[in-house]
Image (cartoon, rainbow, N blue to C red):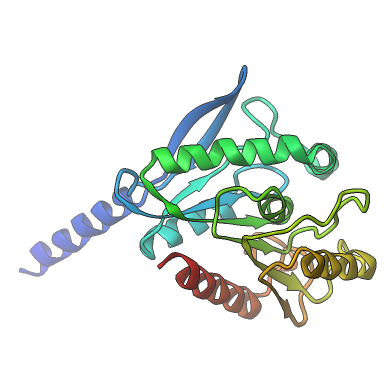
Length: 247
């Protein structure tokens, strides 16, 4: 009996793990091949969450977030912003490539839009889609709001807040949540203040939550500045925001 129970438990564990695997999805921007990932509940009519990864492309933080969101009843799709063959090696190359998209925000918004279309194809309810992004992806989440892409809310997690001051502060209809590390040296006070002005000028529904004793990538367990307590709080705030706008 004990052996049978043990085998059943193992079998169920394998089944659950298998059910939660991510599937690679191939799509294109012109001739550029893109390789995103979608949760295994694709095909069901559920709210959707697009995940924009950090500056080195699809990583474990993005994958784990997708699997956790699946458990919460969302279809999650991880966008490929750079495209096949363009993943950067090292921080210097990652910074250079990310800055290309930050400057060419129209291209960044286009790549986000293409990923949103794939999320819809995966079965996401077109009226209940949100975007979350980490680091460089957090900047992308804000670009989704600035471009008024068809989503009801965006979450920027330790993302860059900067926008070229030459760009106008157009109306923003998307709800905006920023999860900001208190000691993030990559976001100077000038950028922080300009962002608040932008949100107010745009008449956005916006909120910033600041996490004490944290530096830039505080939510990533693989990063040296990971803060477990604050990372858990940030994730709970993410889920609370998504429940409000998607459920």
